[in-house]
Length: 150
Image (cartoon, rainbow, N blue to C red; front, side, top):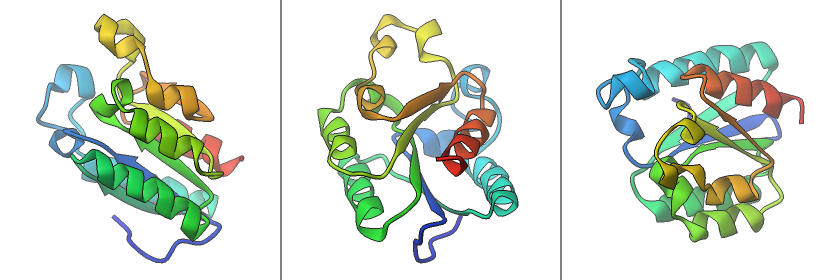
């Protein structure tokens, strides 16, 4: 995972609560790949696209808000955001997305619309430029490729 200085060719990949447990947590839903595995995939594809990946994870809502603000201040090209459960609950993250000009792409490993009813509502999706979901770890790659074209 990279933490170098952001520039116009940097993509922030922000991950919310419980995503640090990927590979262990409900692999029948989220797959067996870890967040580090996904970071490696993104860094490989990012190099091919001429993009630098800055991947981060936090279980704390305020960190995600701060990183969205930082994306604006640092002038990153785009943000891929898997807000985890905050997707369905966080007006603060919604407002942070709306407060920046950096395009945000919502990412989910599973398809929330095929799951419990409370997962069908997305505050993140209401503010994001677009959503990629249901393709496992490849959801991140599809979102990265979309971000490269913005």
